[in-house]
Image 1 (cartoon, one colour):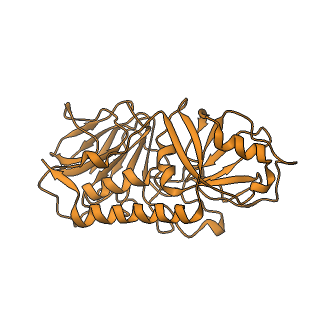
Image 2 (cartoon, rainbow, N blue to C red):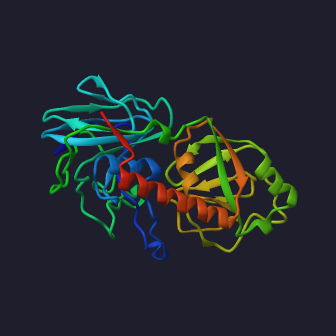
Image 3 (cartoon, rainbow, N blue to C red):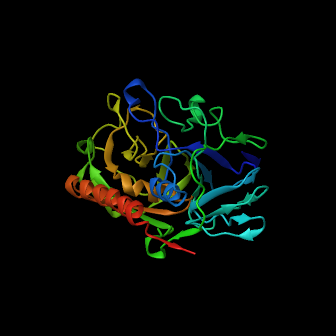
Length: 316
């Protein structure tokens, strides 16, 4: 049992996402940073799709009634176990009665707390992910609150040794991120100058960003004639450009259809970078071919397989 003493700014139960239901209007939801989430579950020796806690900007405080084994990955939220500083990208034992506390993110935006056995909430449409806009999944369909009690899954052996991810695999959460983009499907709605502006300009993350989308601010991207289309399918990574010419990058909680033209789509692995960006951080878009996007995604899957097969972790 894990009790929430303080929930932080926005802490939710998330897993890989609710796959296969977008045709019925249900967003994917799930974790914003798949890399940090996956490594956290590997460190905790969980199943790949186990549910974790996703903390945003300000972490929470959690009390463990019984022995537990946990992993922390993602933004450095100054974690402490019973007052002792702990490091991100590591896993360790929490004794019965232990308390984990987290503060503001020093670098990055989101941190993931994986507990061996996973967070055991009732699955909805095959996922434990929280989609707060519809109060679906997770813990009562909402962000965590003080006093919430989380049940931890059983049946898994608690690891004996602490582990840490090799430093060479650490992602760097810089204040300027480069996002690779495949053009289309409505790039013909933009002038050549507009597309050049998109790829050659610096945009800033505004305060109008959340799990649904990141609204950016910078040079205007010029349309050919209109900023409206007949609503069609939209997915995480899609870059919509409404009438004001400012790009909006869709994230995991995005709607399933949209009526603004999409100049391109950010490739999946790079959405992890944007998920860790804060207001004021800079964004640059880089052109990417479909074949390169496929190769990058394949390389990421192979890297995860390497972590699992060889446990590219140094034991303390």
